[in-house]
Image 1: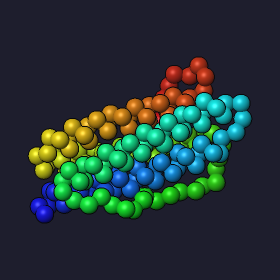
Image 2: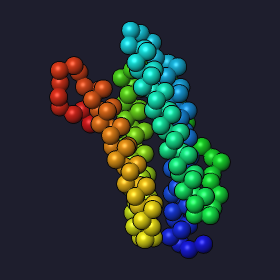
Image 3: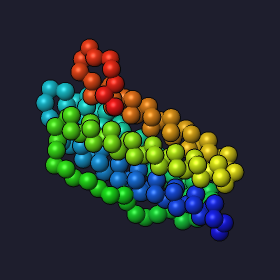
Length: 150
């Protein structure tokens, strides 16, 4: 296997594991929301879990597209035991920021490997992850405040 292909597969498997851990994270968070705003927040968290699973599927498909074996691992699972909505959103923000870093690293590797397919995949996921960061940033703002908290 060429060095570029090996680097692509390694990063894609890291992304696969990271996204699978995100599914568990967002699902867990959805169980821990209480209070008046529970229903819409739980809906958002479960939607995030579903989208994160889709991202994991796509990473695994890219690995097999390259003729390699997707990882059976799962990324690090973090339990801070902080279940205040603000804490959950801050942890989600950090998760999304780390996720976008993985996709930027994949983009860099794909450019060196001259893989337009994986470049475009990485660019699309970067845009999606940056949108998630923006959404969480807006949720962390106090009503009426426009300035970013990120």
